Length: 82
Image (cartoon, rainbow, N blue to C red; front, side):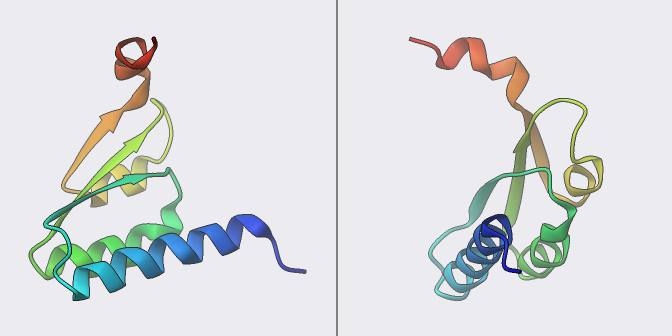
C-alpha cells in the first residue's frame, strides 16, 4: 500500500537532488526529522552545497548531525507568530 508521506519524502529528495544538479541553490533548508533524507543530504554536501536542518527540539538527531547546521523550530516559533 502506498503511503502519502512516502510520496512527500520522495518528492523532497527528488527536488533537493535535481535542483542541486541545476545549480539552483547553494544552501537548502530541510524541514524534517526523517533520517531517510540522510543519503541525499550526504550526496548534496559532498558536492559543495550546504543543507540546514530545521526541526523540533528532541527530534531528528541523526539528520541534524549529518547536516551542515540546524535550527530548532521551538526557539524561533515565537518570532513567527503574528
